[in-house]
Each structure stands twice: as C-alpha cells, then as structure tokens.
Image 1 (spheres, rainbow, N blue to C red):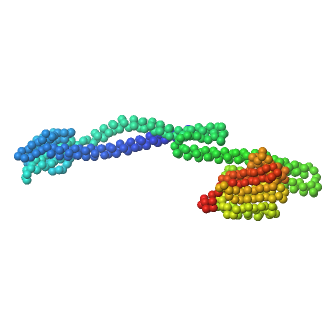
Image 2: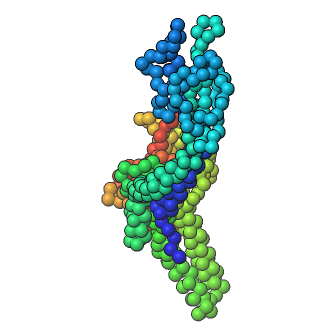
Image 3: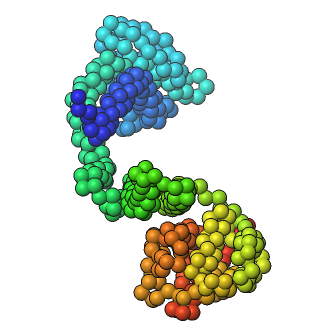
Amino acid sequence: MKKSSIKLRLTMWYTLLMLLMAAVTLTFVMAISSSVANQTTLDSLDRTLRENALQAELEEELKIGSGFSFYRSGIYTLVYSKSQALLAGQLPQALMSLSLPFENGLSRPVETEQGDYYVMDLWLPCGWDDGIWLRGITEISQGAETRANLLIAAGVALPLFVLLGALGGWFIVRRALRPLDSMNATAAAINEGRDLSARIELGEAPEEFSSLVGNFNRMLERLERAFEAERRFTSDASHELRTPLSVILGACEYSQKFDETGEEREETIQTVHRQGKKMAVLIDQLLQMTRLEQGTEGLRMEALDLSALTEELCREQGEKSEYLKLDILPGVRVRGDRLLLSRLIQNLLDNAYKYGKPQGRIWLSLGRDEGELRLSVRDEGEGIAPEQQEKIWQRFYQADPSRSGGQGAGLGLAMVEQIARIHNGRMSLESRPGEGSTFTLHLPDAGAEDVEKI
C-alpha cells in the first residue's frame, strides 16, 4: 500500500485542526450567546430608561422633553404617578392583565403566556413627598431562535471556511516543502548516477532546510572520502602486496618441488619471513593512513612541549643519534596529538637516515620564524631533482628506490604530509641535487598561553 505524501498528511491534519477549532468556537459562542444577548438587552433597557428620565421635569406639573421616547428599539417606557396610576405610555398586550409592584432601580424578568419580558422601574422624586415612576419594559430575546440562526449561519459558512483553509494550507505546505522536493530530486540523481561528488544546492532556503542540506552534504563528503579511501586501500594493497606475495609463493613452490639442503631451506624461511614482515608493515601503514583519511583514528589533542618531545625522540635513535646536530628552541608548545607528531618526526628522521649520505650528518632544528613554528630536518644526501619534488608526497613514490634497500614502501612522506594537515600545518621541501634535502613542518604559532586555553 502506497503511503500518502507528507504534504497531504500535513494538509489533512491542518484541516482537522481547523474543524476542531471551528466546532469549539461554535460551541462556545452558542453557550454564551443567550447570556450575552440577555445582558445586552438589560443594558439597553437601563440606558434608555435613564435617558428618558433626563427628559422628564416635575415642577407644578409633569413636562416631558422632545427627546423622550415612549417606544424605541423594542423598549416601552411608561410614566406612572406616585399612586401608580398610568399617566403616559402604552403597555404591551401581554402585560395588560398583570399588576406588578414598583421597585426602584431593579431589573427583573416577568413570565407571561405570550412571552417573557424584562421590567425596570425608576423613581423620579419632586420635593419631599412627591414624584413619578418611570417603567421600562422589553421582551426577552428567544435563545433557541438565536442558536438556530447561529447553526444556520455556521452550516453555510463553515464548509466554505474549511475548504478555503484546506486549499490555503495545501498551498502553504507545498511552498514550504519545495526545498525538500529539490533535495529529493538531487539525492535521487546522485543515487542513479552513483556520483558521490555531487552536492545539493538550494540557494536561498529556510534555516531548517539549509541546516539539513549542510548535514546531508557533509554526510556525502564523508561517504565520498570513505569510498575513496576504501578504493585506494584496495588498489594500493592489491598492487603493493603482489610482489611480496609472488616472492613467498615462489619460494614455497620451489621448496615443495625440489629437495633443498638445510642451507637452502633456511634461506627460503628467511625470505618468507622477510617478505611477510614487509607485508605486515605495509598493511599497518595503509590502515593507519586510511583511518587518518576517514577521521576514524581518535585524535588525542593536548597541549604538549614540542621541544621536549623532539629531544626525547632524538635520544631514542640509539647509535644514529651521534650523527644528529640539534638546534631546538626550548619551551615550544603546541596543541596536537603526541603519537602522530612523534610519528611525523620519526618518519622525517628515518627518511634522512635512509636517503642521506652514509654516516653523514643530519641537522634538526625547531624554532619560531615569521609567526609560525618550524621543525626542519636536513640531510647531506644526493638531493631530489626538481621534477620529482612534487611527487615525493604521493603514496608509494620513491625518488630512488635502490637507496631504501627494498625496505621502504614509499608511504612515510605521504603520512607526514597527512599528519601536518591534521594539525592545520603544511610541509615544504628545499632540495638541490648533490646538496641534500631539507624537509620543514610549518605549524601555526598560537603562543604558550593560548595553547593552554584552547
């Protein structure tokens, strides 16, 4: 069963809400209509009677001004003497046979066979012991008739009101959800074309949709990076593992096919062990780089002393440390991941040992320059040709594979550059053939106090 669209459901809920509100309103109006009508009648009776009282003057005889109204808007006004004799005015037919006592300023209902009335009396004194009575009479409106009229009006107006409201609600909902249609169409196109590099563009849109689009695009970006990392991992692993696997399989097949001497068997075992270690290192490096690319390797950012960390790593180089020449500014603090920065520095040192002059000197310096922190490693190697300098940051690229002794996989500098980017830094290279190479890490200098606050 096909589900209804969100537009239709919102319109239906909106219409049902309007119906409910209209029903509640109508019920409320009908409940108070009688009391409001009665109160309005009483107010009109009181006002009319008091206005007429201002038009009546008592001196030697009764004088009634031109503004006096004996009948106005359904209200009768009658004038009685002190002895309750009718002096002026006409009683309604239903009250002809009734004798009602006078009560000054009091409004009261009177029931008759022909209808119900409100009666109000006012005493107008003249002197100490004389005066006249003014009596106001008006018929009480019938609540049943009022409610019937309201029901008829509601029966005519309510369907039209609900229809117009439903059409207006559909238009509003359709217009409000137009960006969602655009997002759906773009997402469908991305799915059909299998192009994760495409992004949703809405232009001007409400904040909620802009936020949703931003999150959706960031999700696509992460998916694209994840798929690209998976593709590269698969491609790199299949390509780079082919050689050691071939060597291992060849050695095993040779060992099975021919009767080897103990010396040959030992050599075969060493070959398999050496190639297996190479594969393990390669897979570990590939996994580390993939986790860094995808952001799945948890970063442990902290304020740390880069000077102390660098000196500690240099001391751990063993016999190689005698070739190191250090120029480290003390107290250089950064905010970073200790493990990743240690790996970066170690990779630069390993690269210098591997491609530098045998038993040649290596200079490591750390300091501040032009508002940034710089960590440089310089060797006395043969240098790198200009046309190769941009390629050394690529995976598996080796400017001189023979210099690595077959141990390197060409991932060290690629990982160095990746770690630098994670720390909002960059790597640079200065090299001339025959004069060695200098690799420099550039990091933003936040200052020691700011590093602690970040």
